[in-house]
Image 1: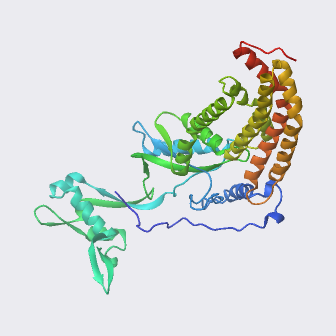
Image 2: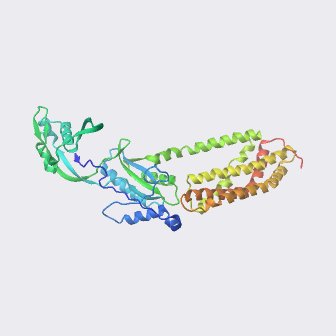
Length: 426
């Protein structure tokens, strides 16, 4: 067994650095994330300590820093030393990946420990059990809680522990005695020896398995989801004998991301049913869905500005789909009215496009002008505003330019496919 101090946080330390105002550090190279990355690279040259810089979380109370929390666990009988080698291999590969940055092991370096080697055979021959030995050792050198007592209206705890001068140096261990099963007192020196070694201050387990916690962040231009997928791919490439899992907020993000497609599907279904009730048709509402032009424009705009597919960009996609559907509804609704008046499908579609062109363009331009400040935002929280504004502007532009051509076309195609009787009046 190994003896270490019970004091917590003997070696870690943390310092906080306040950055200058946004107006004094313009440019992508002066963002908090870029500064933290450069600081980590510079601090890594210090050999006497493991130093790194991290940015605080976007929401107070969600941990100490941004990024993900990854658990590398042993499986199939892998020992801790082998797992540590695989952890070093994973860290080296992760820090070379363009999707990741500041990937590090979240544990303390190995500490000096006093190793107590117990001769079990000799201890048994002396009438001692291992529990008797460990209980005596932990109580005398580490302290054992006994009970509570009331002192002047306050509850205080009672601990028993050996006198400090009787446990000052390793050789003092031989002066302590253990009571055997026959009530005789046996000194530790009769069955135990000591020596110094280096070892972990604490052994971390996750889901019952030996584990190492790894923390890191997504690099600029990549979303947290892309960074997590890269970590999974790197962990899967390790030799047999390891498994992995997410913990903390990363686990919650992983669980929540699996529900996104279901939520999108339910939303589309509800909108489709509402449009089917509006048009009293199952076929026409299919034209008001999809809007690939708007999605393509939003993705193209985000790619041109080197933005990631994060939650803010997805908000922009939903907004773009809503505006595109609104434009399509304007055209389809007018075309349906023209068909009811007796116009042919082609003539009704052309009249609808011509009549609705001006309001669609004016509405789209006004909307683009309204979100333009988001696309060029700077300062605190600018990343979220830029992602939303860029996606909306790109999607709205392409959806507006192409809707007046493709919506009438698809209206005619859907009507001819699902409607047997066609009006002929021009």
